[in-house]
Length: 84
Image 1 (spheres, rainbow, N blue to C red):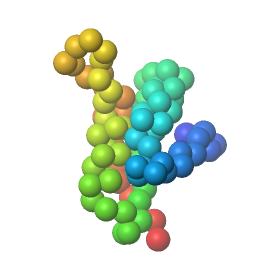
Image 2 (cartoon, helix red, strand yellow):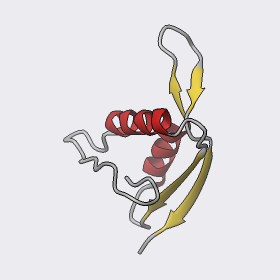
Image 3 (tube, helix red, strand yellow):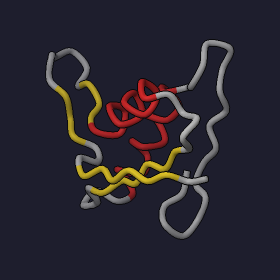
């Protein structure tokens, strides 16, 4: 993960697959540091399954608010890109 200029984190896969909880944690930390930022760019290769891209998008958009059925916005303006 990068914040535009610097790499801010690397998330290794687990035995169960992609670690979306770790992704969420880093995104929440970035939101604290950049509270006004609403943009995120998700880059993927053609080999990444559609379901994985959607799961990453969902993780990037919002987080659940504990004790409620509501969700808090993180980065609602998502752009997708492809890398080879």
